[in-house]
Image 1: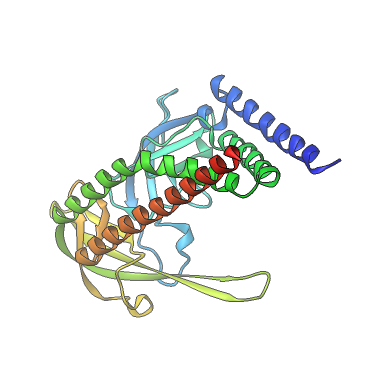
Image 2: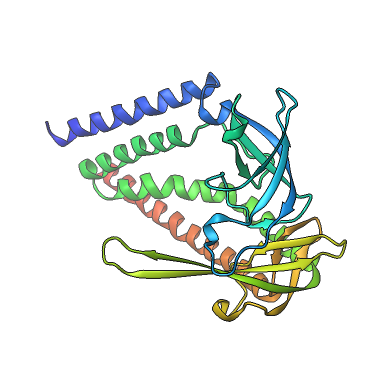
Length: 293
C-alpha cells in the first residue's frame, strides 16, 4: 500500500472518530454532558505544610447539595479531585461535578460555569484529518501548499480573536489599577522533585504559599507562583499583596512588573500573527504563480 493508501486510512480512522464524537455530543451522551454540576462552598481551609507537594492543592472542606435529591454533602479534596485548589478562603464558591447518581465521585473546578459538550477529541480528530490533507497536498504539489494550508487558517483565527484579546488585555490592565493593597506573609514553601525517566535529570519546583486578609476581613490562603525573587528562602517573608476586590484569587505582588509583562505578551502575539499572515500570503502567491504556469 502506497502513501496515498495510508492517507486514506488516516483520514478514514480520524474522520470516523470525529463523526462518532459529534454524534454523541448531539445526542447528549458524552461524559461531560452526563456530569451533574453543583455549586460548592468552602467551609474550612487548612494551612499547607511547609515542604509538602504543591500538586495536592490547598486542603479544604467543601459542602454542596445534590440538585437531584437535595441531599447535603460535606467533603474534602483528598486524592485526585479535579482541579487543584490553589486559592481558598472560607465562604468561597467553587464548582463541583460528578457522574449522575454518584456524588461521592466528585471533582472540583474553580470555574462555576465550567462544563462542555465533549467536543475536544472529535475537534482534534478533524484537525488531524485536515493536517493529513495539507501534508498530502504539499508532497504532491510543493511546499507553498504547506504554508497556505497551515498558516492561512492560523492567521484567520488570530485575526478573528485579536480584537477580543486586546479588549481582555485592556480590562486586565484596568483591573491592575483597581487592585487593593494589603499586607501578607509567606507561610510555607511547597516543593516537588521530579526525575526524568530518560536521562535521570532531577528538577525541583518550588511554590510559595501566601496568606493575607482582604479589606473586608476575608482570610485568603493561595499559591504564589511568581513575584518572589528567592522562593526557596521566602518562608516567613512579609510582603504586600495587590488583589482584585471582587475576586481575591486574582492577585499580584508587583503591579508594575505584571503590567509590563502583559504588554510584552500582547506585542509578542501581534508580531507572531504578522509572521504567520506573511507566511500565508507568500504561500498563496506561490500557489497562484504555479497555477498561472
